Length: 165
Image 1 (cartoon, helix red, strand yellow):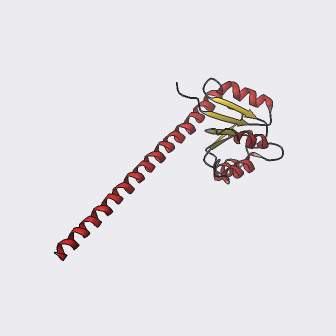
Image 2 (spheres, helix red, strand yellow):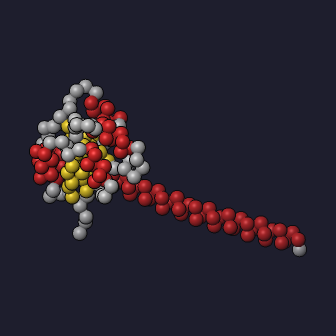
């Protein structure tokens, strides 16, 4: 059985957390936290495939959180999607410039949320497959280069022996 992908939802509204959790639970392993500090505490014990992140939160907002995530090697490859009521000119651009994979405005339809999440996770899976394929090809190329070098050295040795005889 395929393991469900993990999603962390960060929102300071308990109603929003419960609503989103109920939408996602049939399809994903869902964790909810009500602050960015709680997010980092949870990240210390599990790594999700996706973070759904509210922007407007007390203390540390979603933009600052995404910026902080991108500075930490073990977290910078976790995809983040903003899920927010914030709807001013330039908000989406700020989010995308910080590395968000999408920007979903509240209120949203549950079917749209699920489709956008599936799209982001599909891209993640494809990128991971591509990374693994590239690593395998790089390894094979290094092995072939080592064989070529070995053969070159053997040929030079044979030529030297032939010239000395």
